[in-house]
Length: 637
Image 1: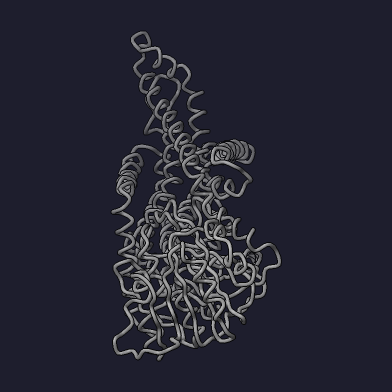
Image 2: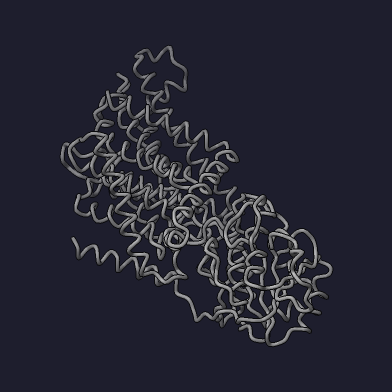
């Protein structure tokens, strides 16, 4: 068992090394004076069309794209405040960059509008003496005046000064239309290359929370304890930097452009599956009436073709269950339009459904207690989904279920959607495929640790979610039935042990590679419990914002609760639902934990609902009798 664990860990770390391989990186030089030019409302293409000196600066400076990260789903001011706070912030908060500079004895000057005040956090203090050469000069430039402003500043730079050009926001600022924006650093001692940061772990991409720590580092000031951003580095890049940035810009927005077509395809699959399931259930009802002469043409057709419709319903439900795994693959396939991407999704889901059914028939169990073919096929899809969600991190970047580089909500690791898929996929794969407990024990132990580890999943709330859900599943599925008190105690113990193990492991992670729990541990070391209280408060605000701004979350939550009552009712009358009840309950426990422990916890619930909702429908279908002589819901097929 220990040997298998080491092999699994070695495989995962090999994947991580391949996914995160980067070239040589250098820090920006320390300087005496910094000029920061801020010009809002541009994109990479619109900036390049301005001509000189922009073209020359792009060739001879450290350049990249900026992700406008903040605690708001839309708007500009939140990004301004985040630039000066070193962490994601709301527009009504006050940045602290000005205070940090003043506390370290550095002078600064603001030349422009209120945008600069939002970034610095205040106007120049009245007590600050007027100096001929401030340490930092912030300049707000309009689009028309940007080229001459840059030309004048570049001409006056010396060995101990450098120039920043920052575009905080693109012209559109909603979560679905926001784009990455250009950022560059120029100076005689600034190496030429692409900007990168441990915050994004993507060459050519930095976050708004990285600006303040980097500017302070250039002036020899340590990063403040409350800042979560990292110092920006310059990575060598031998290829065409401009072409790469243009590709990165397009790659970050392409999933959002494809999303309407993908949503249509996913909705079509779901609608077809639900319609076919409803048809089967209605046909059993009509078939039980016995008198076909009094029925409509549609009811007669469904009653006589029930088995065909049932087979189609099983195929459609399995296709719907395979949507999440398909999304991780399909966005990486070459395609020109969202329509082509949607067609690829349809074909891939159908292929997964067909293949799962074939494998379930070929390798299915022959014992009387073995589950029906449709549920064994669902188990194969669940296993694939859980494996891709946990181990397929390189596939995540800029996908509908993956990372969100344009808004800065997540740049790497495992998303909350992925946590929901790992949770439900693992539990139902275990149940439906009757996987050996020894293998499952390894998976249940490693999954929360990998999900929370800074160098892989970097999702601490997700790690606790998996620990609680998997502990409940182990005691509810692998052992004899036990009390809820014991299950709750075991789940809390599993979460506590996960925290302890992650804390030990994170102590060996390089400082600039720590994320989520690793960063929080560093803040706890200096700030104490105040760091935890601040994290809980901010996550609570974000969770509430997600619910308030997205009414569909309330609908999904009501549906989630309805599944609880449905499983409880059917398990009293159906041997099949009774057999599956433990898997449903374990998934419900983990989903509730995910809802409460993650700022976008409905993503956990929503993705888990795709899995257990599909299994629920398949169990309903297996409990129907298509012979037309009785309604068989509540009896095992």
